[in-house]
Amino acid sequence: MAYSKGKYSQSISDRSGQAFPYREMVKEWNGSLVHISEFEKKHPQLDPKPHRADPVALYNARPQRAAPVVVDLDPALWPGQFTSDGMRPSTDANEENNKRRLQSTIGSVTISIS
Image (tube, rainbow, N blue to C red; front, side, top):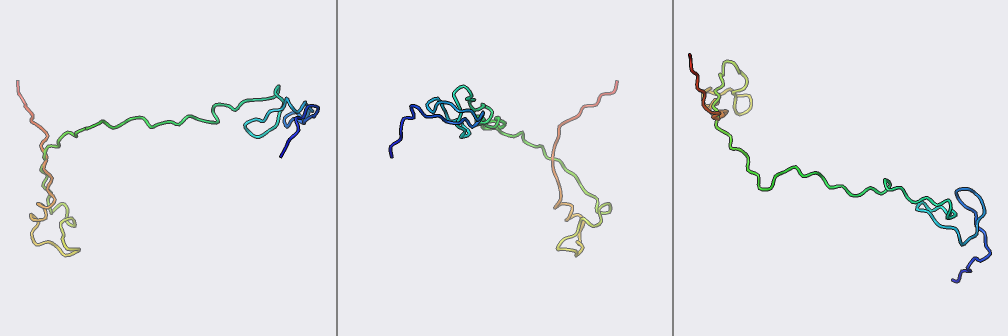
């Protein structure tokens, strides 16, 4: 399809509604046909740059080893906690206590009296 050059043509601006020479019209980023004196380029904030997440993790990090801690639970203070096989009560509370044992060592404490 052949188009004419528009040497003597006029075009209406979508922004102001005024007639301008066809050759001086430009299309904006939003599709509006405006005169070159009315042209506004696209604002940079409309096309944000891709943002990568901040690095948080360490490469080849090794966690500090936890020291064992021993905590014995008294079945008299926790009556419903030492049952096994559903609601059937356990025959040996110490056996249930051993199943829930947590072992950890924190360190040493020195107390001096002066």
